[in-house]
Amino acid sequence: MESGTWRFLLSFIPLILYLLFSIYSNFNSSSKPASSGCSLLAYDHYWIVSKRIVTPHEIISGAVEINGGSIVSLVDEKDWQGKVKNEPVIDYGEAVVMPGLIDAHAHLDDPGRAEWEGFPSGTKAAAAGGITTLIDMPLNSFPSTVSEETLQLKIEAAKGRIFVDVGFWGGLVPENAFNATVLENLLNAGALGLKSFMCPSGINDFPMTDASHIKEGLSVLAKYKRPLLVHAEKELETELKDGVDDPRSYSTYLNTRPASMEETAIRELLTVTKDTRIGSSAEGAHLHIVHLADSRSSLELIKEAKRNGDRVTVETCPHYLAFSAEEIPDGDTRFKCAPPIRDALNKEKLWEALMDGDIDMLSSDHSPSAPELKLFAEGDFLRAWGGISSLQFVLPVTWSYGLKHGITLEKLVSLWSEKPAKLASLDLKGAIEIGKHADIVVWEPEKEFDLDENHTVHVKHPSISAYMGLRLTGKVVATFVKGNLVFDDGRHAPDACGTTILA
Image 1: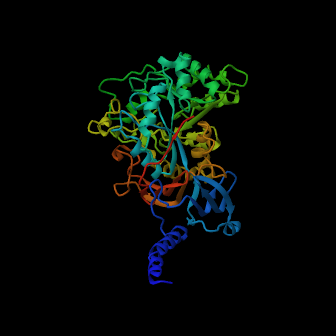
Image 2 (image 1 turned 180 degrees about the vertical axis):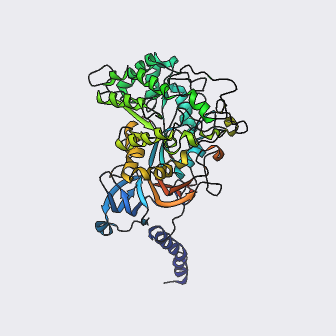
Image 3 (image 1 turned 90 degrees about the horizontal axis):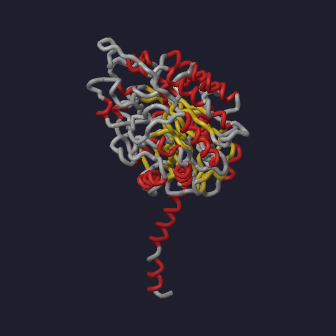
């Protein structure tokens, strides 16, 4: 062979060595995978191994095979090694592998009030907290999402700016409640359901509804088999005594929103939820009561409606399970929300109802604002903006406060993954099961950490969160969204590749 030919062939050796090294790096499980834009992994076919994988039927020691964003096999420890061929393996040891959380009640305030939160910061916080799907509320952004056109604004604002998957609730307000065409257009455009307030929302273009509006909304939703979410409080006459009722005292605010506000609203709701029973006019629709705070009369009414065959579900939030009114310091408006955080006995009864299954699921009701709206200097509970900033912390908060109430990993999955997926008809999410999206959180339930200035917080305004300063148990290690490793050991994927979920 001529020397020129040899030189030509030898010139390919560096390229061949590079290709062999690349293949070795991609398939050697001990190597640290390089980032590839949407994911901190350089491959989309791989195995996750753990001693604790939470499946719909049991907790197994084994492996999950992921390919193309979906779960393609799930094998027990004794079987998995023979099934792995050349695919990479990520071994998480004793860390828990379970379905990513689905937060069906979050305010990301985008577009229009992104200075309060916004899609990038909110979804980064979600990913860091093990949340793989968010459903964004139709208010606090501007304009509110009450039509096909305003929903399209949301969809456009989310494009290329979300790190987890995001769906949208539409709004039921007086201006569209009696216009079936507007509601149908909103639902046809992809809204996963509707949301209404039975008291002033604090947002001018999202006025409150009553039972007549809700009845009309349910009749439209019945055709689509989608839910109506309701903020169930009705305004009552309350009297404040000048010079006696200190606006810096949390008890003053609590007295303006007694539990009877929730009870009155729910009584009114139940005059129309009978329409959701089998054979009734709104069969196929169902009503979901958001952020229940009253564990007494209101909860008893909901239980009775369920027994009667009404299609009714209810959620509560971690802040009602973590805090009690007696503990809230004067002037600390981080704790203001509606309905308000109630007394310690009420909190214990909420836990009982949650563990007994009378409360169906959990959501964050992440409701941030600009810090100045919290009026920290004045500490005025009556005038400060209400809402708990919580998005990144709901997994460790639920776990930390739930341990003494006997919460299990299986119960956690039911409350934060399975039931929210069912509410929003997200059939491919909510479980580690063959055929489902590879939406997975990996976390260490025994790991304690301080939520302070040394802990990286991704919400836009960490200072407004009532959770800052707590010591919590349960550290998120990694979050996968449709197979993409979007969060790992404090790092996010370079690109925001979450997708919008449209019905």
